[in-house]
Amino acid sequence: MNMDLSALPKNFTWGAATSAYQIEGATQTDGRGVSIWDTFAMQPGKTIRGESGAVACDHYNRYEQDLDMMKSMGLQAYRFSVAWPRIQPSGRGAANEKGLGFYDKLVDGLLERGIDPHLTLYHWDLPQSLQDLGGWLNRDTAFAFADYAEIVARRLGDRVKTIATHNEPWCTAYLGFGNGQFAPGLKDPALVPQVAHHLLLSHGLAMSKMRAVNSQAQLGIVLNQCSVYTSSDTPENRAEAALQWANFVQLYMHPLFKQAYPEVKGFVPPSNIEAGDMALIGQKMDFLGVNYYTRIWCSKEGVPEPAPYGRTDMDWIICPEGLTKLLVDIHKEYSPLPPIYITENGVAYPDKAAGNDVADPKRIEFMKLHFEAVAKAATQGVDVRGFFYWSLMDNYEWNSGYDKRFGIVHVDYATQQRRLKDSAKWYRDFIADQSQSAVQTETADEAIIA
Ligand code: FCB
Image (tube, rainbow, N blue to C red; front, side, top):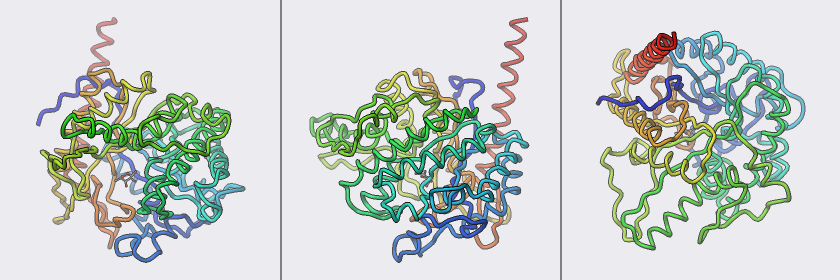
């Protein structure tokens, strides 16, 4: 397939993403505190085969090698998260120097190799001590988070290009408190809006503290979003689609960009809002991160969801045009938005190594389709600046354990050997090609000016 990416800006950033708990391992090293995922994974039946991130990709000990691998692929940027329990083992108080030191080395290692660091502060590994006090149900957690954000911004903000407060607050709120699939594993849908509000408040408080530190970093948040489709344009389907959109997208986008919660039939707004909260939450951001994997299908008449591109190993429907639709829809509803990064998009397949090779042609196809979907959104006026494939390497996929392989790099968990899949080699050549044409356009532009 030939891609038309001509609508993307010429300095568009191509990268890959990971998160701390999914790759680092070394959960008891250098003073790291216990996180809610350590606790959750130990409870029987919560994760597949009881798997946890205790070892994961052992990235904490192998980061130099992983940095070299990123460099060999020509990645322009790398999105990673900081483990809060490494920085403040109990979620409060003085910083743990060894924890900060790890990220210091990681950031310097990226910069030495010409890779832009994009940091996420919270990718779900809350210190257990804060959970013991109610976690995100407790308003105090939002203030603790802002202190943690300040520590990180002070230490790394001079070198990190972007800092996102949260990764996917929908997952933290809904999967963590609504249906119990993720840590801390509570199952009460009524808690979801309350948790969402505290997460958003913590974002706002952290933004203010980090701005005051005056770091160089651009600040924002990362939301997982789905476009919503209906099988037919009936009033019932329309109402269902509006409710899904409200719970998935507007619950977060409205307060962030309109300083108010949505008013939609059936939607339950938070009841724990205090004076001043909405202005804090809705303060200006420098970028918005969008994670996109699939769409939402609404059909009151029970029409099965079509899957022209098939399903992934997670059983998620592949829907590249849904990414274009999503970006155009939020652009229309929330304009003017800050610049957007696609901070995650990727696919799990049961990849197998044969010698040193891992053939994953379907992943390459998936990437091309989604790259083009982003470019199509750009033709409709959406300001997209970069794309991070999820994930750099196979890793611990939360309650699905190690079975689901999202990486462009294959990880053999028995030996920790990394192997570039065909998709990684394809991405490497693709990025090289993109950089070359960016240089050529620049030279041509200069020639015209001269
Ligand atoms: C996203 C998460 C990421 C990973 C992918 C598959 O929801 O942010 O950690 O699990 O899904």
